[in-house]
Image (tube, rainbow, N blue to C red; front, side, top):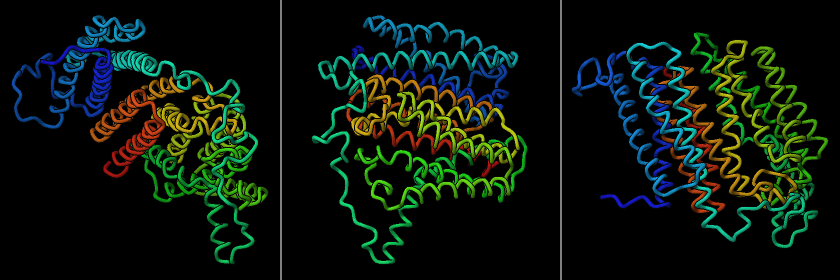
Length: 488
């Protein structure tokens, strides 16, 4: 017999219920997009047959959806009973109440769909399912935050901002805000090196300016946009895909270089960035600017010559968004810089679609929304781990200004928006089993890593979430490419 649910285990139960609700959404969208619903035309049995024998893939998916609905319903009931018995926070009760009220409605809508209801009923079914998940996730955020506050009571560094003005935040190891951080490496003048070593060091410096670590993920976003466009029946030449990716790589390099130029003074103050090329004058600033301009020109030449004007315009907009709006305007001036700057990473989804169709379609917009919501869910974890470093650099990152617990709450909520957008994308684009399994499996791992942040309250836990978020997005982008291009 299971022991009674206490307040600690209630959070586990609520987390499991939220994951079950998301699994139900993902399986439901898969049933809709694969046409598996046609294998069962009655409710609650399947074509008047209550026996379960050997099943086809469609029948397995359909019955899996019903089994998930039963499990999720039981978990919602158990969670509601535990919440009222434990007298949890009224905000958590409100979120759970949303699930309790809407779940029977969901069952009725699902039955109506099986019996031949209109498409509008299907849309309502999806919207209500998302509302149930949203209510449960909100309740989970409140519950985890309250537990963390109880555990960390008296440790004000987790509940208060580092400083009202991030430029005046306390520094580690006695460093002055106006002096380079103590972790700065000893400089070696490039003029003192031999010719070969000097060329190698200079080439490496220019490569670093382009931020190559960002290229693989952003190129995957563009490639996923290309794949989604092919689902519409559009054909795409390999040369177009190659040119789109090449133009994107050049654009990312230009944006990264402009970012290095504009942030070089702040980079000197941060342990994480004080080894960058412009900090140590490995590349003169004027040369870096000229290099970035050349990359922009090369990117535009490639996009205009081998892709199309819309893709080129969107690429130029992405460069300006990241280099000017995010780096120069948002990042140094507002705690909402990451959220508002998320559009820069989302634009490659539109670029990939535009490269194939010469237009912008709804699936590409929803993929862009996935990236937009994922960006703060991903980056806030890094900002939590390096909050003191960002404060030393004078950046008003959200965890610096609003505090770590508030930032963790936003990670959880933005993750929820990411998962819902990913499900909506699967429904709109007709993605199948591989996408469903990947988005649910790694979505659950991502959610689990965020929950662990609340429990462990360490920078290592925050960094784990940061890395898991990369794996999550990379995996679902790869599955989109596989389903739409490789095995289509």
